[in-house]
Length: 635
Image 1 (cartoon, rainbow, N blue to C red):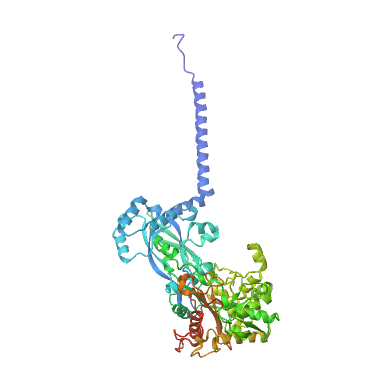
Image 2: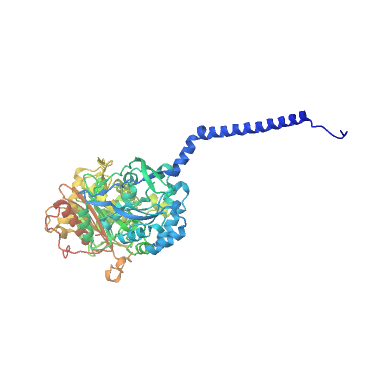
């Protein structure tokens, strides 16, 4: 055996093998421990998490939109309802190529640019604003032919669904647009304004109240969303419903508004621009509130086209403008009974106090003449009753000067002038009942006596809404009980209580004097509204008025023919009936109507409808006008 021949070292090899075996065994044991730990984590610690994720692949939670509450008039006539409609929607998660799908759909049905733009906005909403597999509406109000075309091509339109939905509909169309308002698609600004809890209320629906009662009572009308758990296959098709929580429908609203009275008011306006408000005196309920012209709110429900919106928005007649609660008009002589009551209560005048009326009034030491609407005046001496009945401006120039701005402002405050009435529709304006402090703060000027004279005949800085005038008249008719106007009478089965009333304190004698004078306006021989008393089955109290739209030079005369139609005076009337037990108060303004009798006739139509239920043909003759009817300011 060679000295270089070496024998194997079995001991050393065994020792190396043993070390390696221990290392491998250690690794195997470590891997088994890791595997067991992972298995424990999956099966025990995170069991519920992965079960939930697994379920999400086959179980989806779908929102069930509630049925929006209905709106009725006082007699149960439907003003806002829900109608079934077929909506074309796309489930993004099921569509392989959105562009291809949209192109195919465009070949089958008409899809406008506005609809595509709106769809794109919805598609890009953050994930927290949209649930997975939630259908995104593309087209509303599909007709039968369009539905058939989509059904035939269903095999090419993966992810496209046609759903039956309830869509808001206004059967009265333009009759109550400014009062009931409308719903429309929720926009991004409105979505951002919703907190997480509020946002959950709109799962499954994409409409929200935009204006009017639809906005004011949105939470009550909306209802509460329901949910259902459904099992789906790999394609997202529903296999079965696992669990369901039904939605709670919204509350129905019953209004004080009377559809028949509203129709009568619109018809009496005869297509002219203006506003009419009627209030039930005992409750403060608004029986009619017309703003003309109006518009069809159904145009806005599923998205108005750019062309239609532009036509409405750019119309010189302002159909989108709610004149009844937003229009600021000089009230003209309709303020005179209220100011007369203020003068009586301040002991500045009494029933026998009279002024000389040569047809104008002058402040001591001034050359300017403040004209009466009647060029030669109303007689040698004019007292309270005649001043109201014939609307004598000179009497009220004198009264305003003697009362002064502070007394006038304080007394007008009690009737709610210069502040919102609090009616239950949004966007009401406050008008303007000026004061010494107001003029100093806004104009930087002191209050002048001439300002008081203009204010005394409802001109100058004074601005009122038709609703304010109706509320003021209702307060006069109820001898000082000022109730907050409201449109909604009942929510569901719950009768809403009257709003807190305020009281204008005045003596019974003074109330009687002023109300007797207002009755003389309609039933007196020389009353400015005597034409509407013909064939009447009840007595009325009222006050006519006209209000300048453009100024006229002191030495110039009002010439209707020389003025453009929109520069002519507004015609106004406020009144109540029956005179011995007032039930209804009305305020009417006819823009550029000139003759106050045109506004008074509209009020008579409403009195007849409300008090006689339209059973007697008592509508005054269209040709009837009071003696000496005038278009001058102050009437």
